[in-house]
Amino acid sequence: MPAYNPRLYPYPSRRAVHYAKNGMACSTHPAVSAAGLSILQTGGNAIDAAVAMAAALTVAEPGANGIGGDCFALVWHKGQLYGLNSSGYSPRNLDYETFARRGEVPLYGWDAVTVPGAPAGWAALSERFSRLPFARLMEPAVRMAEDGHALSADVAAGIQGRRVMVAGRALSFSLNFSRASLSDHAARAHRVSS
Image 1 (tube, rainbow, N blue to C red):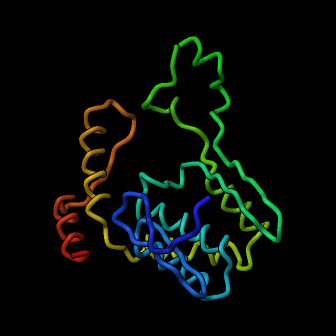
Image 2 (cartoon, rainbow, N blue to C red; image 1 turned 45 degrees about the horizontal axis):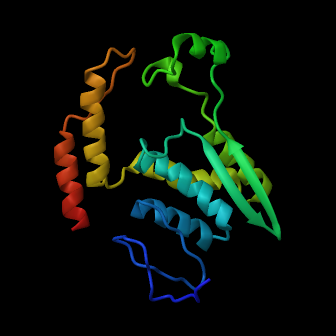
């Protein structure tokens, strides 16, 4: 195995390698990373920060890390490795035989949906490993949802794409988009991030 070289980064990326003395919280959204860092600064541990950031990501990037998704974790704690599979179950009346008869699991509609596993996973991680109360870990996500946050251009473009896709499908729910166009939000977010 080659010797470690902090100046050599052999992977194509737009990101640089960073180091921190007293902890670090990284995500795809600055407000979410700030939420994780605030948890660390108030006495939380890495699991506390990860749970807080996972919840905050459901607000900042709902399509990438939704509260209706699953949760998987590998945790190294006090010299022992723990694994968590908090993936969702299919609804009670949908089983393997149902989909075998159809020949596939549909991409859209209620038959493609599982019972969300993420919230149960967050709670399980918090109960076993947290230093801070679970409610405290949810505070950054609640604050972002209530007060708003900057919408990244990538997320705005993704939502716009879903809007077109959903409009073309006969789904049994409706979407409520804001009066301002998503392009306006993306342009504003781009100006903020530039």
